Image 1 (cartoon, rainbow, N blue to C red):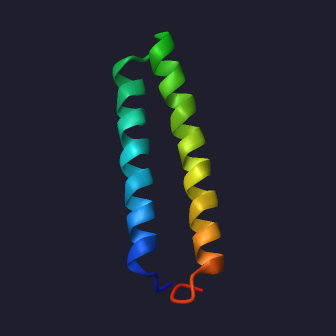
Image 2 (image 1 turned 30 degrees about the vertical axis):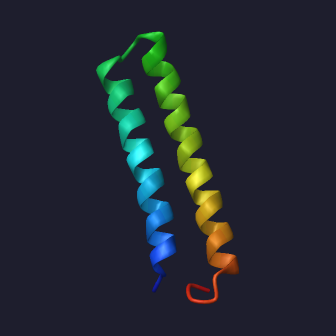
Image 3 (image 1 turned 90 degrees about the vertical axis):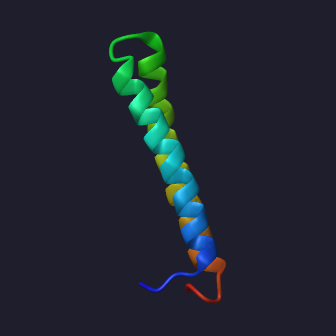
Length: 63
């Protein structure tokens, strides 16, 4: 699948956020802040999927 630079930028930004949240949840495993970070990581992953699908549908270069 060939994608444009904007698609890559969107994906990279979300992946950085998800990685940060997952690392935080691993460091604070069992604590409330770790649990919240894990939930936010899942939400960010879903948001990334929605954003990339929306971009792919509308982008003339990707779609």
